[in-house]
Image (cartoon, rainbow, N blue to C red; front, side):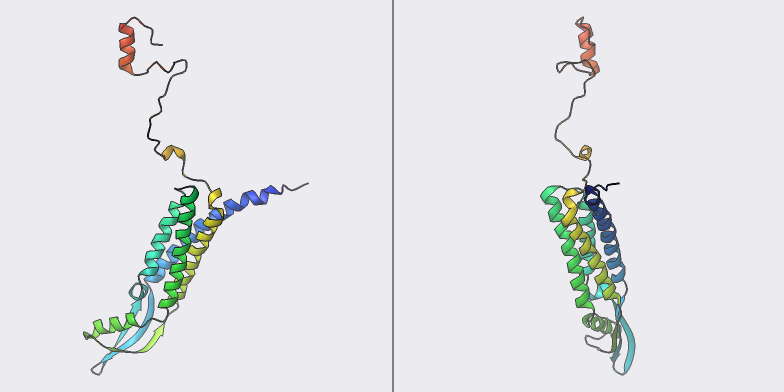
Length: 205
């Protein structure tokens, strides 16, 4: 039994579509979840007192969360546009993922957020932070950004072959006149026109 050589190529866009949807949605969710977790810990000390301080992802940088939301919006918009617009939106999706990766990696060793937290806890403009440690959540956020980047690359590669929103949801700027079978372009189905035709002794049918 011979195998159709076009079967594999025709199913590739469908697999890419499913992969982009899953990776794009999962990537945004991972980045948003990681942003609310603790990225850094330490001990704030001032005037002989020491207190534990922490900093979550949003305190370190709000950029990953913002880019995750942009990527999620771009993922939805991919199916609302066609042609060049779809390519541009796919590029935005890929760039948002790349940006999330960069922001997460830069924040993996951040100290500024811990120092700000220490100053707030101690009520001083400056407070020393010691025993600093960082968690693995920035790397989790970077993985989420990588998933969004993969979704964008899939959209750039296969997006032109994916379906778009149905044309019935698009405004054409004109109303199509419906006619009954057997009527001509000069006849109307409006009730008032039918009554006027009867008054004139015409058969509106």
